[in-house]
Length: 398
Image 1 (cartoon, rainbow, N blue to C red):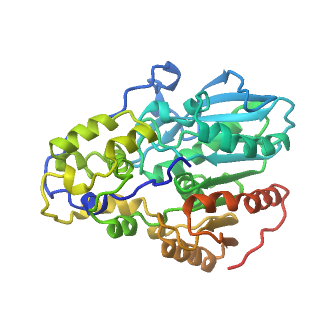
Image 2: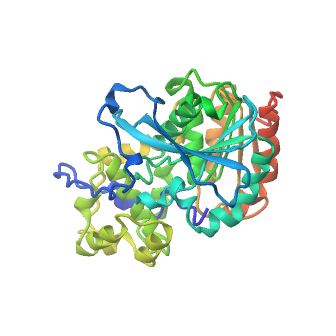
């Protein structure tokens, strides 16, 4: 994770959209210039998970002896409308039929098409290529295939966590429909941390109702923001070094829920200028644009009126408030005093899963840091995933 703040610091501003105001149209990202990413005219005729297009991608030097395949598929947005989404599959040249498939949800901090995992793979992004490639290669050398969904969707709705879960599940469906990948009957597991953990956790919770035909061996989720409402309410209106990511999350939610979350209506001239800077930006540019800024610097007024409609959007993307539970084993890890993610929401959600009969193994990493906890948990995560792929019964410490 470059900086793992999937929805943060915008505080009360996200709940203060004036009731009854006419919603301005959100600014959408510039369409990807590659026509492969465009939605087909007959999109609505397809079912979630249907393959729309497949393309072999250039080899990646960071992943020797690996084929790269880009898949476009039909998915569903947060309001039930059809969308075209993409996932990138890394698979060994000599892959054997029905070897394990891991859907790995990367953190995507961004509002533009160049922020997609399928794009970042072909850049010199040091976080992806230097830090994470060695761990990925361990799995690829074991014969596993890996699916890396662009889980923010075509509008790059940063902050729309439920959307990420749906795209993740439809991506798995699509990958298993591509015969050349040889994973139609593979054991399948999910993994992700922080923002990627949100997409993973939502996919696990939605699977019983959204994709009941999928048989998932397990889901490993770390540092997950389980309750965006509590995050936002505790962060308030103070200036913050990563405020740009918070505003980006608000703008992403507006893209996904334009009628219910019109945050643009509450921006003053400075806020609109910052919004325009963020339109197609990824992490570094977003951070630079919002460093040291607070909600009161970009809002039209300091008069705060709670809007239940806007609040409901944040609640809908808060997993702690979602009644569904995973129908697969869960591995969960986090820092016990995470400075970014409320730990009590994680603990409460895991207790609810345990009470419902989900086999959960939960670990606290002995560090007071969100990022370090991600790394310290990886050995246990890999061992747990390997056991699930072999069909071993999952342990539980509920």
